[in-house]
Length: 171
Image 1 (cartoon, one colour):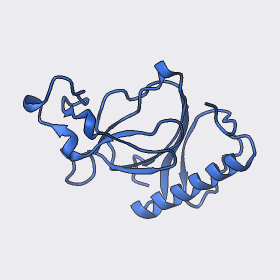
Image 2 (image 1 turned 90 degrees about the vertical axis):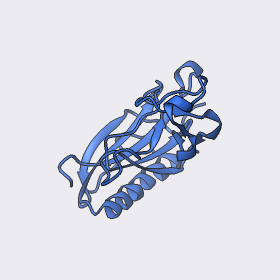
Image 3 (image 1 turned 180 degrees about the horizontal axis):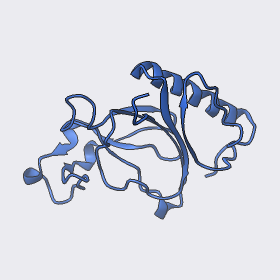
């Protein structure tokens, strides 16, 4: 599988709503690239409005490695994730989490040692947007979303993943 356009390089940037940012330097021109660039700008504005922020971190990465292989909880308020190409982020609804002393040995553990029932895992589809509450969301330190990057390296797959987070200074 190949991307329907060429990505020159992965990038990360922190930017303000009042700054127009263009992805044209990172993508070859074409309908698919233009659609992704416009969608990222829409999601960026959506995230800023949702969080009442003026700045946010934006990351668009072309990945061929397994990334975050273990199920984990992010140390953020809310993270927006969208996979434009390749397998989407895996996430565990509450009913998929098992107390460590009551789980079966076949279930994978997240980074905090929580067991995850494979049969209840969910996978975001291409273009689906995930809003994941993290540990720093008020009152959410023990209930943060459990998720991981899907394993792709052994399969020779590639993912194009957008991530948007609040800036450390609060934006």
